[in-house]
Amino acid sequence: MNRAVKTRTAYFCQSCGYESAKWLGKCPSCESWNSFAEEVIVKGNGKQAGAKTGVNRVNQPVKISEIEFSPQYRISTADAELDRVLGGGIVPGSLVLLGGEPGIGKSTLLLQVAMQLPLKILYVSGEESQQQIRLRANRLQPDLNQNEDTSAKPDEAPPQSGMGASGLYILTETSTQHILKQAEQLEPQLVIIDSVQTLYSAHIESTPGSVSQVRECTAELLRFAKESHIPVFMIGHITKDGLIAGPKILEHMVDTVLQFEGDRHHTYRILRAIKNRFGAAAELGVYEMQGNGMRGVNNPSEVLLSQREEALSGVAVSVTLEGIRPMLIETQALVSPSVYGTPQRSATGFDSRRMNMLLAVLEKRCGFRLGMKDVFLNITGGIRIDDPAIDLGLVCSIISSHEDIPLPPHCCFAGEVGLSGEIRAVNRVEQRIAEAEKLGFETLYISRYNRKELNLSRYKIEVIAVGKIEEVIGSLFG
Image (cartoon, rainbow, N blue to C red; front, top):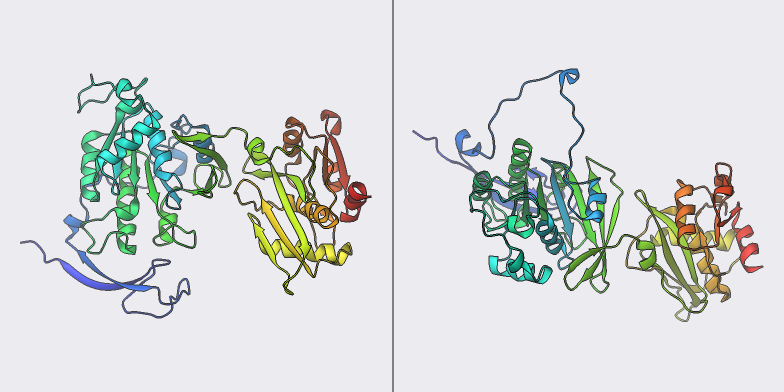
């Protein structure tokens, strides 16, 4: 005789996933107000809750010295930008979460990668029909019909070389139990879920997209990935605050969290690694949105620098680092008298609080009267930079706009500005110098504290070491 199904009601915080037996006005975990929602949870007996999601086995404790170690094998995605962000490729058995705004290109990127990989791939969609996915595939690869290999039987794995889109299988399903059953029968080498907020598990009685459903579905996919050693990619929606929708524990459960950023009015997209258990968590990939999909940008410095035919005031070039990749970006500033009484301060792609600090340093240490001036800063290309090494370039662009004097051509900057007006050293300055020299710049301003560890005879670019903002102003503006 089967045990009766247990039903209970619980309240979950929609921000962090905190569970409470009663409704609370303020979440004790994340301290957000009015975030609790009631959900009905239905749990069956132990057999039902432990439904098969992979190979059932009992693990035993093993001494760390007795664990067999082999070099980590990775699957190359044939996409240099995605491989860089992942840390060298896809790790078998890993669970990767890709988040981003609607329409930014998440589904397009993963479908494009799936069509290029010579692997057997299961693409699960809970948002689009098979015809809609085929329509997008035709746009990404117009010659799809000619490249299909129909010689392989449906229940057999196609050949590994040159498989391409012929090894891509589409499944429109939202039940995790059905998805995992089909995955066990098909035995793919990669599974893509679009999206995790549309999935539901029969073990939890609540609507798809709720905190409990997202957590349970992710846990089932995580067990499947670890037990079968099949990597799983999940697409996740984000909230209006730019955070991945669902409980915060979702980001702790997965192995890698990727964030797809960019302005839909710009053609360039930024892929960031927010968390990565198998690689660096500060890597960045740059894509260009085209009519036939995403194109990886191998040298983002060339696209982030505008081609100006004449010198303009308020424009400076800074050398920044994103992960292990050095990039040159253009920083723009506009300083004008305030006509509304209250000065305006606006920063696009840069922390506005750090901008206010730099303005206070210029006014206190250098004597520039900016208290009644409107100041606008912009990082070109639609990207956001947090590297403090662009402080010196921003300061020079502000002074250039304030004095209406263009900076010398082929000049760039790499230095952090302190509260006392000193130019502080930045890390990995050799890579920054090499990148500036490669792109044809003639002069680079750095901190004098970086000068001690450099052998400038190796570079053709002129490196000027400065210790105070006053030295930079005297060198550039006289």
